[in-house]
Image (cartoon, rainbow, N blue to C red; front, top):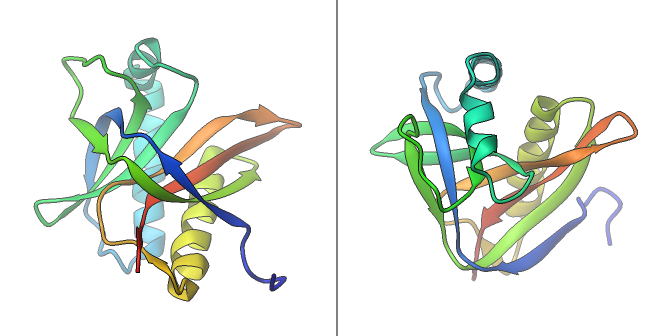
Length: 163
């Protein structure tokens, strides 16, 4: 394996549902700095106003999802949890399909840095170089799974199809 190649796996996942509270990102999708600032501001808001706690209260596990999804030509971004419950404030019930997912693991000082790193590796390195699988759209997520040694660890999950 090439030293520069990210460590990634392809995993078969059952379909699952993420309940999300979201925002539509206004920055152009090429404006990396603008998008990251919007995402950061959004996370600060959902933590402060109680929306994240409300989601955690109905979650099936401890994972916190940051979901990217294109909906009606808009770039949507959600804070979410895996659950079959719904909440009055929820923006969207996001269905992740059964099938193969590109999974990249990592750890970083904060959830935001982790999310940016994993997304960057997956979309910037792994997918462009992949010969036998491709991302063809649909929701993708970075998953904050916990903390150890002062770092946040997690994964990015991107649905892929075999070429």
